[in-house]
Image 1 (tube, rainbow, N blue to C red):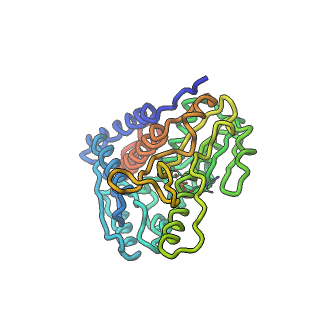
Image 2 (cartoon, helix red, strand yellow):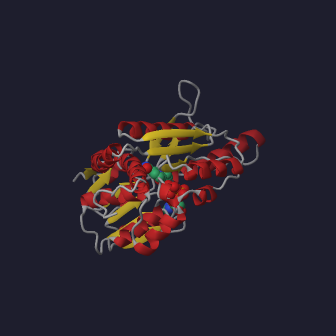
Image 3 (cartoon, rainbow, N blue to C red):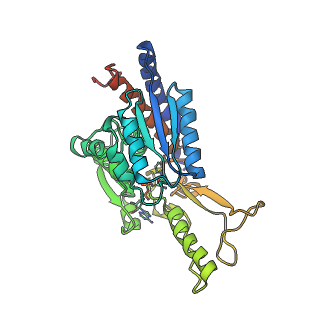
Length: 336
Ligand code: NAD
């Protein structure tokens, strides 16, 4: 059996159609939605993410404004930027791009923003509403993306045994709350969990750990220190996908959120193999061993093609809904 692929692009098209309706209502009132992104780094991954969001926003009638600060910007400057965006009535949504300058607190910055402009749905007031009321608006984008994909596979989650691997405030915990709101029976696994045991009975598995990538980054730092200072050479980590075929129940719904950048191979000295240009030859992988798990699962997301495109669609949805609310325009279908 080969699993049915859960396509993020198809689900994103539905969300973007809703967004387009909102953009149309704003235009009719002579208004527009504007997403501000604060970036205080020179990180290629962050640049790529900002560019992808700008492109999607532009293609869907939402203006994107990148506010670039130096990578060593003091916390006070970052806070001032967040407050400026929050106070500017022309701006509808805000995202704070990571990594942040050393010492800056992501939570403090998110807490300083107007919760109504929280494009990612990560402000404690919005997550708190999810905890208490079972829903939030703005909604946490990645968690909403994962839930939407699961619901394209199975409409009714009541009583379904769902395993969320990862307990971050950005993905794992909000997703667990969303699944609870759907009456699922939810287990959250993390670094101290017996994953094999938790997976055995799971009918739905969402992997949001980024396990191989974080193991690799921790090892690489130790390996570089060893090269510079000597001592005992560190033991290379396991950088194989976290969710393997022999752990997955036949027919399960498997959603992969994890992003991992790991070397294509290791050299004799334990360092990454290099590409033709002399740079580490890195490859992208999810948390799930897609090639093998697809023969066991009933439904599965592809690496990169599942949650990612849908997360960005939910980001735009939050921004457009915020612009509609700020302009006193009823949000289609929400009763607001
Ligand atoms: P995080 O590092 O804040 O949290 C990772 C969580 O996974 C932690 O709770 C940790 O306990 C758990 N974990 C790590 N290794 C584990 C292991 N071996 N076994 C069990 N649990 C383990 O990361 P995050 O922000 O929650 O993101 C998770 C992953 O999802 C990352 O790879 C991130 O890049 C990716 N992500 C993707 C999207 C998208 O749109 N595709 C959006 C957000 C995050």
